[in-house]
Image (cartoon, rainbow, N blue to C red; front, side, top):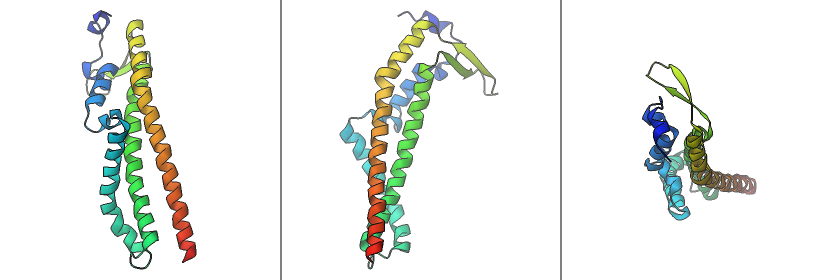
Length: 170
């Protein structure tokens, strides 16, 4: 494919969807989802574990660990899951934004920082290239994030049920 269409492109290089995709893929945070399942889950577990340091004192205020150990552990874990949920949501929104820009035939861009939005229609060959990148690179990442989100939500529901059961037994 020739690069001729991009030479006449008025869109600043950093606002081209392909470059936004490359930047996201190389980003420290957004590249997490490009990792295989094991390392990706380990990153999320690190977030969860670190957030327990914040959540434990808050949970201890409601559930004294010495008297309500199970409730304390469940509430702390649930709080940690919220941090992981925020991470997953941020990852999803970032990848979805770039994915939508890859799929669209028209690119909205700013020529300067004065909010002077312009629109440029991609040439057909660039649109097809970007669409292939979306289908084979971005869409699988979005599906991976969705699966992880559903698994996290299921775990959180289990924790809530456990919390209510443990409270009713006391």
